[in-house]
Image (tube, rainbow, N blue to C red):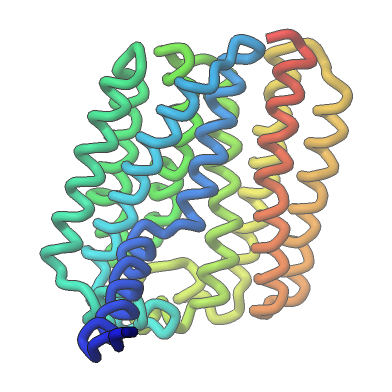
Length: 305
């Protein structure tokens, strides 16, 4: 005889799914994926042909935990401002689906577990130390600075550029010039990328009290100048590997074409300062980064790392 499910059971299943989905949302999965791509690039760039799957997997697991922890703590710290922004008002905390204390516990467990995992799973503690530094600067420096200074975007770019260093340290236990270049590319890439996002959501940021350049830039002139300037610096930084190693024409042509593509979108924003064009800058930035990661790896293997 078939027994019908109780109303309590029927209601509990979607509630559990929603709760799990909320915990996943706390970790900002899309950002985490981008972080892990750059971690893998840093590891493979350092290890070259001697790369091994197991250490890479350990590095990705530990970094994913730390990245998720940083995002959870960021959501906890910004739960009040998130409630005032349309695009974040339905996040688990401002929507009231999760309790602040459980988010703190969740974020703390992820952070401690992630750093310890990297420390014990890898031969040297360097990757764990860089991961811990990334977590602290993102949560304790960048996040509160968003309410204080427009420099938050520039300073926040530093923890955002550290993931490939985690990968490099996991492979070598030290810092090399090649990963410094990768760090600089990721650092400068973030500035036009986030300027585009800030312009698109400037009214939301204004309601939340976030001190972004576009919030106090009604014409977009300052935002445009900043995008173009940092994009030019980014292109210059991307060519540094040609100074450190023999000229690789594949890398040279690829870096110049990708840089020109990204720069063109920022120049178009200068001529047409709309949310639509800012979205085009954002799309160009999203295409640029994985393209450059691929070129870095090709360059490393072609020039015989």
